[in-house]
Amino acid sequence: MSTTVTKAIISVAGWGTRRLPITKAIDKCMLPVGNRPIVDYVVRDCVKAGIHDIIFVVNKGSTQLQEYYGNNERLNQYLQYNQKSDLIELAHPPAGINFTYIEQDSNDKYGTAIPVALAYKHIQKGESVAVLMGDDFVYNADGSDELTRQIAATPQGGSSMLTTTVPMDQVGRYGVVQFDEVTGAFVGIVEKPQPEMAPSNQINVSKYILNYDMLTRIHDYGQLEVTGEFYIIEPIRMAVVEGQVMTVVPAQGEYMDCGNVRGWLHANNTIVNHMA
Image (cartoon, rainbow, N blue to C red; front, side, top):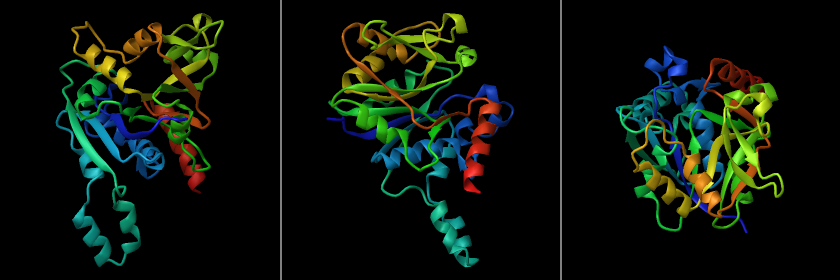
């Protein structure tokens, strides 16, 4: 029996320094892929998967997501007045979705664990939650979505992570999944290894289904005083050492890494070619 997930935490905080200078004015997650921002592909996967509560963890002071997922009455009036009412649906936010926005101070604690720690107060005991990054996505040309498949592959009350494979000469850019040589179970992540030292060519794409115990561990980890970055994989690794199972779900679609210019251009070319 698969787990039940109706809530998602989407991390979109940070300055996107690899994409400067454009990210001086535009949040990295709002950079366009086709006619939509990167993050909207993540949100629409959530909608398809039956999630109705989305918690965005945004950079302090940023309002771009609130504007995008809000109603723009002036735009609606303009489209209506100029006989373009067929376009109004494109400007509407997804129906039936409750959006919550939490600010993350970039001068405070940072790392992939912090958004979960900040959003933890919005999670009810016993809930399982999707935890996703907002600057990449997995694309399926047939219109299916990875999140629905990942939820279905996650045992009731369990946790899972989505992975994809890359050529061995690219593993040094990612966290690479390490499996137990005997059981094949998930053991941990090796960060940015040299190809000859990589335990596999299966990489973590930071798309998780996490049970309440795992979410609590991440929250508690975020309260510690740690020098440097708070990696979400650290409390996950400790939970696995203590006996919890992290189900690894290989993605069926194509991973779109929009954090660098080449990956973003590839995503645009792929999406636009399928639009034609």
